[in-house]
Image: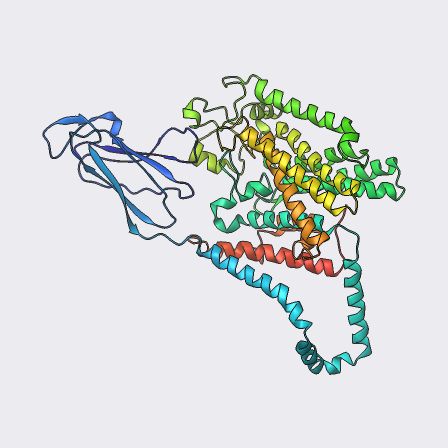
Length: 568
């Protein structure tokens, strides 16, 4: 070409984003090497550099080069060439663009497929090995191999005692589905905190929308516990636990003392995380807001306790004061979010700022939510949220934003209250399995319809988009819908039909605090993780993530066998 070329790009995921420069080539034959991000499809545009006139090589005339555009999904570790050649000057688009593959990319999802097959094989062995061990042939073989050992009276007594312990555990009146639900969420959280094999779908959505990480927690790194489904199950567990203590004759004053003690201990645990990190070292001098979020989260628990410890054990209609309080909280969130004037930003803005929304509001990331955090916390606001890397590469925002800020606390309380509604259903319809599952299904449908209406079943065009960073009302409704649906299925399979004992998720579910604290403090040390040598593929990354997660499940299993449960 007789003039320089400029290649611009934007991601298909980036909503109404301005094109950004990717590279440029000077006039004449030439090339330029760049590295592009592969998680999302890219839209490319080729135009003359700085809008200069371009003399077509095969015609003695000058024209402004009309751009050509194309979309392409690049894959990891592949080498691609974008060819730009002169076209017919009489046509509207006088250049031709196409992409060729110089080196085939890696098969990104092959490690996932292998891992799924291996896990499926383990599940089959888990199901059928006990049945095989109970067969007649295996019994005879076992008697022949261990006849001398079984003749020992002490060994027989130990076997009988162990069987009695296991039988006592099985006969416990504890709802195993709740522990399974909690352990399932916690297991995914540990896996994602170990980088999830390096896959993009185990990271958060850049702004609106949902990924696997968003379905289980609002902050995937080790400093936050599972604040969506986990907050839901917290509300459920609080209702059941406090009701059980009241039936045992515990007074409200004693409940208040227990509540105060738990709050103090949880806050102390939070401050321990503030001053310790495997990456930062002991007693870090400067407190960044990312670590203070632990205290905020643990205070969410305490706030849930303080609001609802007096709640009677009934269903919706009889307890209208609670619903009025929650509706008023939600009204506050809606009014502040959509009516609070934010300087130099449109009122009610919910976008990411930066180059999003055609670059009209570059410093308005988060709208009212970020404005309140800056107003209350000043320079102590969270400057490095877990998703800021995505913001910088996609939305190019430079503003701090706290994905678990002050305004988001309101909807986290609402999420906990929805979980408490599940606990009320368990208590009000005790031993009425069909009624419990019917109520769970009804709540899932109601919340799902609410989320669909608010989001218009779209990612970016809804009245209130599903947004984990803002803890939007549609996000809470969507998470509540999925939580009710999942809990209903687990309750049916585990507690009603008895088809599944909840293994292996029930083990970390019964020791959730221990697993959370342990993996947070020790997760970046051997044998849970190590310095990887093959970072250009997902094989070692995925193995490390699965290995670390499996180790914590095994540790939780050993503690379960020893009847050790860390409680507050």
